[in-house]
Image (cartoon, rainbow over all chains, first blue to last red; front, side, top):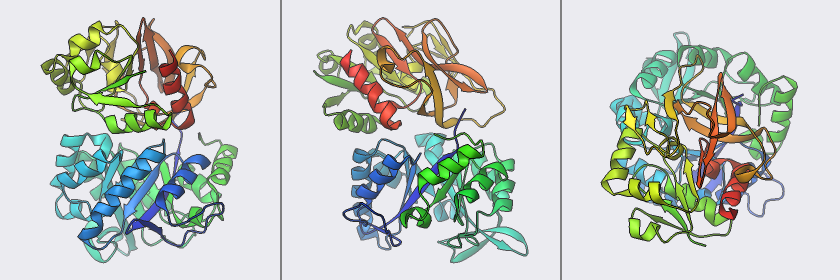
Length: 250
Length: 193
């Protein structure tokens, strides 16, 4: 049976992992290669690397990180952050990334999804959707949550699929960092309405939260950053809880 | 020992090279028949569309190389599918090395079949020292049905071929270069043949 995937996410700035990594047994908790290798060894099914570098000058540093991570780990990984064009994607894939995720650029230019899918294959194209809970329902936001759109999350996800996205990375900004659980209504609504895998993100705090997002919201994968970085919840603990709940896991 | 990785514009050859290097070997990535003819092992990776891949292979006479190569060949993902007779992806005539036809998944589950799935095998040949039901990483929308050449099976609502072997030809539907320790062991086994 196809297993449900657990995906740690690393935020990379100027070639270093940020977001307060407090990992035991690491020489240098800020080194993305060392951290990626540690997660791979602990049983992570995939990794996501997000470039949060503000300036264009440092984009080549991120490509170097991608190349080094690709040499060190033997599991798939997705890269994202500020991706807006084919040439950029070409460089990241050539450096060894397996998939790329696009977000704000796809909202302002949805045709980008089609172009990327045509050129690199659907399996390679992840659309990251950030959504906020409002009185109008779950609304898509862009530019790391600083700009609001009029798009409903479910409608946008369906459009992404039609345009050739191979996967949706769905983040609830209303839950992000709260550790109070994934947004089950948002994830469930999107997962039921698209035929491509949905990665749930935002709000993970306990192993039970992962069980809930798989069992109740039908997510295909779940992503978390903080709880894994700080070591208060390990990947193994999440997988043990999933096994107890009868969820297929690796 | 010289390992060749066939480059024809479809497939992440860098990932395969990284995996080979992690095992302590080197490999050449090439699309030149004369270079690849001198190798001891040939890896035939592939991500992309069957029709475009076959067109690219033929335009560089790599089809002749693949059909006449007498040392071990390992097809990965699309590379394995193209060892067959025919693919429903773009109604493509493939290399016709092993008699199977590639079909599109028509299952109620999500397609592509993407992620880690358990593989049942007989723990011999390229699966030596790999526990049965080990998980491997898959990404594909087309599949090879079970046949006499199947040496490993995976299940995605229907059973399908996870690996084939016939003569000096081997093929795996999953990506050993992205399948953690089990994948590394499989590549080591292939190198050891």
